[in-house]
Every structure is written in structure tokens, then in C-alpha cells.
View 1 (cartoon, rainbow, N blue to C red):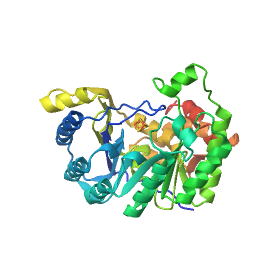
View 2: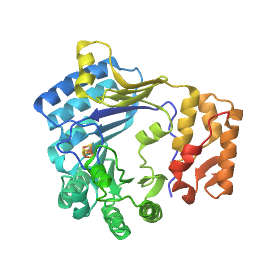
View 3: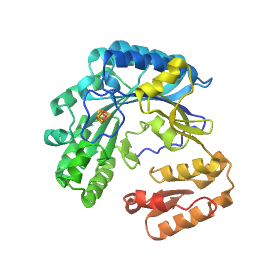
Length: 387
Ligand code: SF4
């Protein structure tokens, strides 16, 4: 079984948000725009300015292009985007991921990604069951998803991820087992499994509110537990509540984020955490683009000056989700906080150990299987530093 390493604390990530989607999936509450010629032109014009205005001397060690559906971009636009990223400066062994949806990917785009420097592709398949695919409002067919995977797999990316979603209305454990069996048969390098959430302002939430569908937390717990048991037994070691990979194929970009290192986000609604500030670009393409084009004052949806304590608490909370666990001594050195400030957190962790919800190995606290299933509730109870 592989072992996840802590990322280099000097690692700097780059995130680009491509906000276009051709349709809205029934579960999705992400900010998105319908694609249009003018939309793409404005986006690229402003994106170039965004890169100029937020440049850095340091090279990026990871890149993640997400959305939206970045695969909607034409091969020409993909090359342009890659040019902007390369110009911003990427390290030689940079992990460079792009999220794509099965309907949008073709050989021409794959070539543009590979030539641009992309080495990791993440394919949003979600399920291999057509009935649940339709239930989720995804606009691709299972057969199309399989074709897209074969195309991507043959192309020679260093790593390929498949995203799966569970907890669709009507989905039973046997269906989820079938989905996991199929994903293992495809043998990707990485698997992300997400529990369906019912966000306000989505078509699925409306069905929930009208009582047409219901949330079944016991079933969700059983889905989680089956994935935790089954995927590692098939050679996909779990390194986070929802993420599994072959040895050495963990997503470095996500680990960098969860370990509270730095990253810069470009594009509408992108988050950054850089030089003590966490900010979110405007989730409106016009509001994001206008000040970049007019060189006027930028508007952010969020702009927070971070203290060392904020970063420590977030490292602890994210640390609950990763199998590697939490080393309080490392966190104290990394953020320059005295170890005695962790007393209340250590006491809390010790009480979790007594309840069988946590384990401590070689100085690292990590949630046990019973603890992991209650991760959100446990995270809500973690005491403040020094309290
Ligand atoms: S889930 Fe992805 S593809 Fe579907 S609407 Fe949301 S951002 Fe677009």
C-alpha cells in the first residue's frame, strides 16, 4: 500500500476556472455561464490581464484547470490557455490537471492538451448506470463516457482520474458496488468519489423540497464504507475521505491545498490563498472582467487577511479528512505557533481515541473508520487554539 507524503511547504499551485457549461446538471450549484463566441473572447481577454496583474516570480509546482467544463474550449483556445499558463512559469515536473466532461473531449483537444503541457486528465463520468445518469441530469450517455475514457487512456497522459458520484435518488448499494466494479475494471490511476449533495438552487434540491426524493444518511454511510473497503482491496489506496489512487498518483494539487500551502486562482469565482490573503474572484464574468480590462479596482466575493491561527485551524480540519492524519508538531513548526497552544486540541483528540474514533501512530492523529464516517460532526467540535 502506498503512503501519501506531505507536500513541499514551498509548493505553489495555480488554478484556472473555466466557467462555461453547455447545460446545467441537476445537482450543480457551481457558478457557470453558457458558452458563446463573445463570452469566450471576453474571457480570454480578461484572463490574460488576470495573469499579468497577479504574476509571481516563483514557478508553479501544480496546475489545476477546472470548471465549468474546460473541455468545452476549442483546440485553439486550449492552446491559448496553455500558453498563458506556461508563460506564468511552471516547474519542470509540474503536475498539470484539466477536468473534462465525456461529451466534449476529442482527439484534436487531447493533442492540444498534451502539446500544451497537461499531464493529468480528470474525466467526470459520475456513474455507469444510464438511469442514474439521467436522474443526475448529466447530458452524456454511458457509452460516450466509455469511449471518452478509452480515447484519454490511449493518449499517454501520466495520470487519469475518474470522478464518480454516489447517492443518486433510487441508487441502492448493489448499484454502487456495480459502479465501483466497473471503474476498477477500467483501471484508471486515480478515482474520486463524491456523495451527492443537495445544494439550494438546483433542480435536485427542488425535487427534495417537494418531497419527490429523500436523503437517506444510512445508505450514504454504507456507500462510503463500501468504497473504503473495496477500492483499497483492488489496489487503489485511499488517501482522503473521497479520493483513491495507485501508488504515487495522488493529486498533488489537492494535497497542496489541503495542507494550507499557497495557490493563485485565475478566472471568475477562482479562490486564491497567497501571501496571507484568501480571496475569491467575483462569480460573475462581467464583474470579474471589467476591472481587469479597465484597470480599475477589482471586486472580490471574499477577501480575508489570514492569521497563523486561521491556517493552523484549517490544516487541522482538512487533516481530519486525509488518511495521513495530523502531525501537530509539524503544523506548529510550519506556521510558527507554540506547541502549548495545541493543548485543547490534543485533549479533544485524546477523547476521540478513547471513543474509538481516532488513532495515533508515530505522532500522527488520524480518524478511524468509525470516526471518518462522522468527520463533519467531529470537525465542527474541534476546539479553538489555546482555548
Ligand atoms: S457539474 Fe460540472 S458540468 Fe455539470 S453543470 Fe456543474 S460545472 Fe457544469
